[in-house]
Image (tube, rainbow, N blue to C red):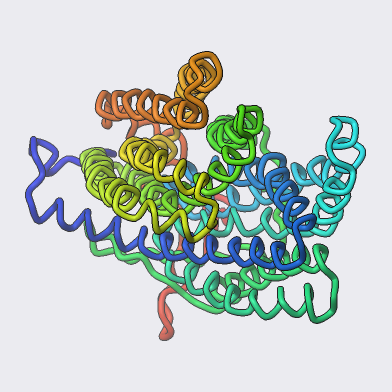
Length: 507
């Protein structure tokens, strides 16, 4: 059932808006902190590669770009397909659907890792066939081979993070990432320089850190009991079902359920990859300009800048996906609509800080990375354009989260495709090469792509029929009442212990 009382209210009150702001920030702040910690971890890798030498830095940069394109973007995109199911399942209190979705997603990512691992293992002959530099290719291939175990770590980490985030449990994500990153620096230095493993040591330290994060998360999940208190009723719903004691046969079976998951995962993967790959596409174009050295160096600074600025939209997107999914699953469409509007409003407000930062600090930021005056001069020109991109990027990324929360990732994939590759890419090529604007023209192409994307996304969001989306969520994961009819909750002295049982099987 969808909400009955209060649904006639046309506009939310200020206390309702502030309460929604609090809920979104409670979910988003730890995600933001976790993203910043991840950014620092990647900076450590780049610095260590630079200390090894220019050849190692070039090969490591090639390897990181290749692993992002061929592996990490794919796994991350496929995993986001479970956001819709888990977010709505926790909203409807259907813990069984959430748990089985978690297990199926892990199986899916592990299977996807097999071809990715084979590509990474055979990187050297692939790159040599594309006429890449043999010395740089050898270093990159060495990194990729030792990074293969990281595919297993990410196949487990991505689903577990989304599962916990979907029920609003984000602080353990931040602390597990923080603690593992504290150990990351000495592990990386020890393996790279202490044991003199070089580039393989950097790759090994990366997957050790991710396995450490995984270990801390599993410790939290197996040794804590959490209870969600729904403000709409007085029932406390336990959220700690047995998650991964063993892979259930139910998770491996069910053609219909696998079909639903794949229909959500594949468009989500496409949407993520299309955006990630565009930045690599821009790097390739920069290398073909009249002054490739300056353009590529500036491109590296731009990518580091956008990666840092992207942490805030990522947090808002995750929060919006969780809140919209939870409310739709709980049968409260007006609350889902409020969550979407508040999230977009926060995105619009915070995006101005990115614009101001790129304008005011453009010279100082450029000098952090280089002392080359030509590179700094070009960086000072393009950073305000990147700031304008952030005005569109933050709300469009948040809107992607809203679409995932309402189980419509295919719309986001379609919009990303035509915005980045039918609008942004042609304009970037024309400005950069035909009209001779150079790297600045490539940045204007990115700006055009972001504007087209945000206009399309916001149009879809504000034309959404939230009542219809709530009914679709009911069909997808079941209603709250359906779930309680099949759940026993036994209260003990220690707290609330859930026993998910099918009552019909006991007849």
